[in-house]
Length: 458
Image (cartoon, rainbow, N blue to C red):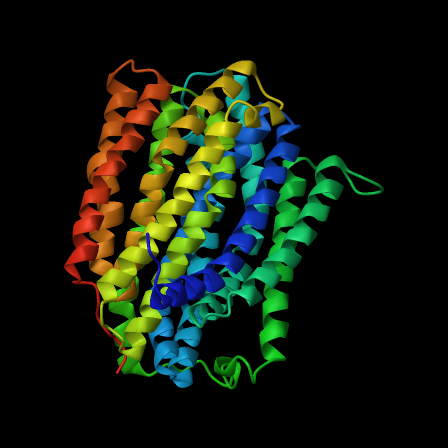
């Protein structure tokens, strides 16, 4: 494929934004891998308890992502237009929304976390194991609640910085937090030196401390460099956002929040259906998702960068051949997915051996890794398409494309197969997840139609 000078310019811009996010997410997921391995040394019940708790907390993370992304669409376009006041308004809006969401989620989870965790423990397995898994997961969850509001404020900072192309700053903040988290894990999980041996609770404490460290880094770094990050000047004098902008942000934010909420709940429900068929699948899928998250950072960061770049282009008013640019950037994302898939296939027999669990769970995890490796290029295609469509503010279309598809096709299929058939867990997961390939055809039509390419900021 011949690459002209203009294509090189866009690929360079894309990589400049994506590589720091890849490094940040890659190292973060690498620490998550070490977390899993350290917690895995505490036994299968610890792996399952922490995995279930994190799956539920994942819903909160994606709700935050939706709230931040809704006004983030405008941040990217304001930045492309050169409107610093507009960027400042979106930053304030993110701070207020994320703090409210974090507070409400803490109240909800305080009362209902054990009940939610128990829903994953109804599959085949001993009652003693289920009870121990519930106790570990509930204790871990309570500690993690302390970090929810800091995570929300961090998302407001990091999301705004990424939208204005300052992706290296969130990367540095994340790297600092990763070091703190890793040291805290070693000290508190195993009880090194004079620290107590806390197991899974130690991992939760280390994670919460690292969340605060990450937030303080972002506050201090941006606050002392206000000449570079103009939006931070006067951002805290008050939290007023003009009513006309609030009324513009909210219609874009709500479909994204609803989408991320329903999508994450859908993933939670899928895993609950898989656990209903086999409790061992919880541990095996946790092993698979750990390596998936580590290797998938390339296409995930690339897809997010594509959305930001397209948003800035739309904000600048450079809409010439916008569809062609989007398609070229998506191809680059798919290439990342293909390379990641090949690597997952290579390591699939060896990675589960790192975990202190049964041979059956390791074998199941290997099969899951192979299934998701096959699907990774398709996910890369869909991921880039999602961010392209979202860059022009078509949040209703992304809602229908993403979470509605999952609830109409994937979840009913998983529910039926887990409750009303005797299909083994591995082919069941393969069949359910493969349904998502159909979204590639929908994504191709939506991107090529150009209905998403709209300038939102005036």
